[in-house]
Image (cartoon, rainbow, N blue to C red; front, side):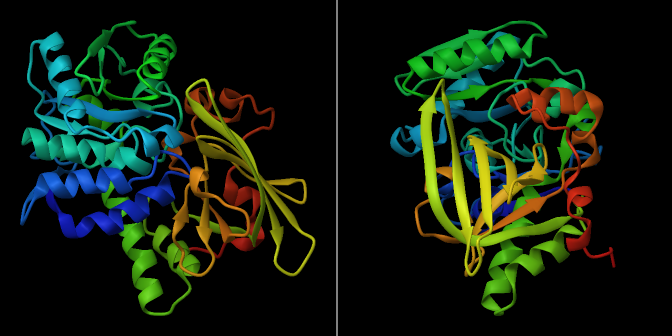
Length: 375
């Protein structure tokens, strides 16, 4: 059943989207301001349930929209506001058909917000689903692609009004390579529309209800804090009733070092944490998003499972560009849905896709003693 997202929901959604962004995906704050501005006073966006045939018809054209680029660049290169609509209209013109809805390609970070901004500006509904179930750094890393949806044609819109259409057929890796180069030459950030698909393909390939999941998890953290409850335990309990099932606290400590660099259109680096009252060491490597977490040399969580860093006192998620020396944090891992753990999915966005040699082992198997039995 469809539901209405309002401006009052945006702070909780931004918090939950930052959590699901696993350190990357871009800070949703700017996107949140754009959506709030587009909604004005009392406006709302109709969110469609992908599994409800009354919401999403099988033959409906759905065009996902997003922002592309390195998260650190997005903090400096703020959207003009016209680019998302321009990308959408350019792709509609190429297809010769108007979209009946838009949708996120990822539910983490700023790209939880940009499709909402596009929807509000274009007067379209937005499908409550996405193709990553978190944030990933590359455009082929989509359940859409894993399960047979073509990424092309895609369109790119720049802040100066320039548009580019790319069509590499079913080769999403080539599409990513070309569009990344274009985005770098546009200053490191751009707006895109890609993976145009029918409603039947949305139902078959998307991770359902992830925008409402972000809203739910963001609200969970806020309410737990207001009620002076442990936000991490509240998160773990809340996740049990979702497709994600498990939440695990892996480490508590202070940020001791952050090595961060922007190259090839990505933010890459490592963060080292040290225990509060012991000699334990936690090391996290990232490419836009956190990829692997090791505690005292032992791997505790690995992509595609989610690894997020949160403030120890407030439970607020911290992006990789927001990590600073001395911050007191908790490392929290979340299991991914089954469709993101299939052999074909792991081939596209499992450890080896990021140059990691370790075998993917689900976080609940790596940390069996820390996970309570389901209620």
